[in-house]
Image (cartoon, rainbow over all chains, first blue to last red; front, top):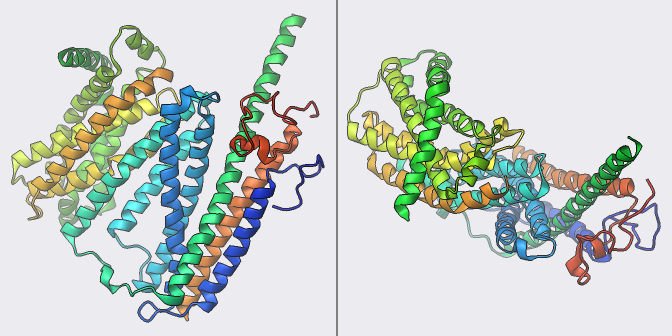
Length: 256
Length: 226
Length: 69
């Protein structure tokens, strides 16, 4: 994250800029402070005990994941609707969708892991067939499919288009899955966690949670920007590779 | 305009079913596989009768899901190598007609598969029928939803080299609500649970409607470039 | 006391996964940068931040194209 300059120092070929370097360091510092607040400063909850500390990372991860899913869906829609009218044929939107989608899957995985650990402490088991858990797990898998489409070997335009459609389909599917799962669980058994059991989060705990949301958002933004740049670099490499292959073929033609 | 759409869709469906009739892949391979899935579950549950009876509705839908994925796969494999997609496009059919036609053909093949699976479930898992109308409504609407969704995702993975593995990964999480709703409704139809089953048929109808609408919109852009 | 182990595990996995992901992005970027002989400052990687530069035109953006391989 550090040490790169734009002054042509060839040993430091990095994708950072001044702005993202500052963002990176601020994010890193915020995460350190967040860990301190969450693990040391914040008091234990009267009802949940120490387990509340896991919520300081669980809630921000799902916030980042859902935010990124929204970003992916919006960028995908923009790619489909506005892409053809743009000079770069919407590649910019496609890269945003891809970067956000990958970050979303990472944070959703962390949501599931921290949620399961929290469940282990609170319920005694890692997994409950609770509506929210089940929906999240299905979302996770369907977005893995989205990433699989993005990574498949194919013509870049065709792939982007399909990925964009897949992202929109996945977004449409979230409410369908959510309501059917919710209905399934409420028809069959009472929800395993009642929301009124959750204690009021106030004071130090509230401040910790808010700060944690901020820290995770900063880090996610930093990750997304760098992921975007990596996509751009990969595209440049593909273009260069293609140009090389074409000139090699031309040279063959001359020799023959 | 609407009739033209359905006439064209019927042509596409007829073509697909003709191919199936001549090759008999679904009849000779997919249906036996579906039955095999049910038998393997009996092995997994150690042939525990009460357990299998309880699980019969779910196992039926699991069989439909996995064998159905192969039907969808097959439906689009026949399009790939010979460029029938291009031919259809040149024929001037609207994408919507292609979408509905593909889905209709998949639907018909799935219904044949399901009849076999139902007989298998009744014979192997010893379930009784308490509400035949609910059973028919659930399977028909659930299958329509699956066929429409399958047609969308089949087109999405058309012409991709990794299609065999990509399609199930994309399709199964999306049709999970159909499995859920279908299983719960069948529990009522089989008389296993006393929960109302028709609510779930309502859910299946909504899902089917949503995916029919999405497919009609999305199929055009999907076909343009692939 | 048992819960503390689980909590620390949760924090460890979360921070570790994010760090690993960040590292993988940076190292892949760096590898491609070396391969192509370019560094991509924000100006060419994120065009809208620096003005109306066309990202689809490698010749037009300074420092993107290089012969060194």
